[in-house]
Length: 298
Image (cartoon, rainbow, N blue to C red):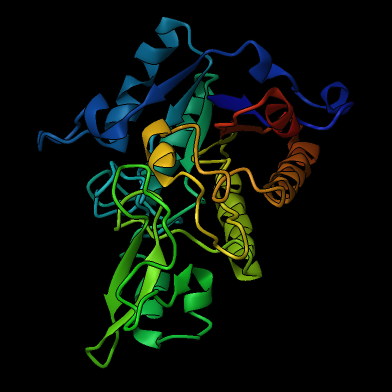
């Protein structure tokens, strides 16, 4: 479910607000949309070449699937660098050209942002592996000692969205079996620890990086995630958590603190809207079991 995380009441009178209320947004999966180089892989130059076609379709804007540097273990949703373009798709200069052409054609441009987890190739995770237990670098993620006499069992019984345990054990820098880290998707997508303020500060910088380049908003991947129960307790029914997929483990999703993040992000977007009169859109991928919880996002 995609849920619009709306602007503050009253903003519409001072901006091009509410453009998103009846806008038609076309999702562009960059890798397969249009290949400009003949290498068999779509790219940002191809998206730019296809903008007039999309304009003729009558769409009001496009949502770009992740094009950031990534080892592609999950179609680009394993992000290794949130402030750059994967060379297979182009570079930042090409993105700026795309942004300019979209503007000239009157098209809005939304980016996919992935705040729940990053790639195991992200510099933060590489640093965490090298730093050792109890280090500040590991506090950006969910590292924990295992259960059992030698720590050979995962820290809890949570299951990953794609199947199997939600924990993987690492080998410590000295070569011994070590701690476990949480990944609610693939093992190549370690979950970030949003209880560490450094994580939130970094993502605000990411938002500003792309807003400064002119984007009109963000589709937020796994917007109901981010915060986990602080004690990481066992799930009452882990098999159900795995089977239900989008109706997910309540200990790992929809924690009350997540709304602090969206208020902060909305505040950042309002700041940019106040500058230029163009309201920025936040659309969250939100999976919730009740109407009350859904209303909290809206």
